[in-house]
Structure formats: C-alpha cells, structure tokens
Image (cartoon, rainbow, N blue to C red):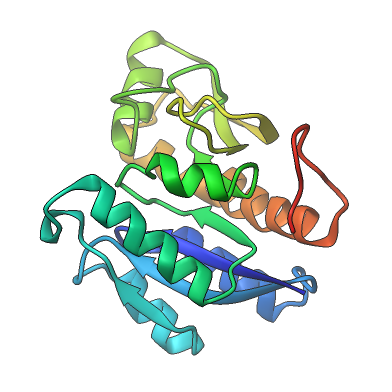
Length: 205
C-alpha cells in the first residue's frame, strides 16, 4: 500500500472525494497518510480530522525564502514516508526541490480539459468564467502529473462535462467537481498506487 499526502488550501471537496473513495473500498492500494494545508483556516483540515488523517499547516509567508519552505515541505514528506503527493485545490506553487524528488509522483486535478484554460492565472472560478466567456459547449476536468510548467505535466485522465445555456461560473464549477473531479482523482490515485498506470518517466517507489 502506498502512502499518500494531500496538499490543500480551501474547503477540501476533492480531499473529501478521496476520503469517501477510500471508505468505499475504491482505493485499496492507497493510504491517506497526511494532509498539508497552506492556510490554518482551511476547512479541509476539519475533513482530515474527522477522517482521522494526520494534518499540519505550512504557510509559505512564514518562511524567509521559497527554498526554506521547499526544504521543510520535503522534510515533512520524507518523514511521513510519502509515496504519492496529490494537489487537491492547493493554491501554492510546488517548489523545484519537491518536484525533483517526487518526479512523476505528484498529481494535480485541474477544472478544464487541458490544454484549454490552463497555465498561469487559470484556477478556481477563473477557469469556468473563461469557458463561459469563450462560448464553449463542453468543458471538464483533467488529472495530470506535476512538473516545472504550470499545468504542463503528462495528462493521466480526462472527463468531459457539458455546459448548459443557463450556467454561471458557480453552477459550472459545482457540476465539473461532481461529475469529473471527484470521479477522476480517486481513480488516478488508485491506478498510480496499484501500478495499473505508470507515468512515461519513472514510477512510484
């Protein structure tokens, strides 16, 4: 069984999807071993506590440099013997030291069909606002590996979600989460942890 760390910043709905999948037996090869929040008031921490998952807070602004922050994050992941890192609504940048050591073992869920509406500046409601402004008829979500390019890593899974004429950014965000993000993320974690899916470069140790 592989030990999984989930990095969060907000409400933790994708974390909850992982917790629910684990409880339902849909992630038998994954152990949710750690939750790391970038903010002390992130509701995701309450979800972690309710599920009995060890959690901690690491705030970038509390450290003098990004390098110090990265070193502490890396030390935490090593200490907890983490095999796979999941970014679940994590609004901080993962540093190069962490990416290098966990090469092809960090996954992110993004609320669009990459390469559409991805990269710098495309996060949260901004993604859905852009899709609506463009007049798209279909959007969706992508689970991908994390590398040094924002949203630029290898695509693992994608799922399309239709856009309705009456959609707002908020209603579209909710439907993309329910129909795509919460489905894809547990599936990708289980496939990576079980060895069913291996990235093109490297694998989980």
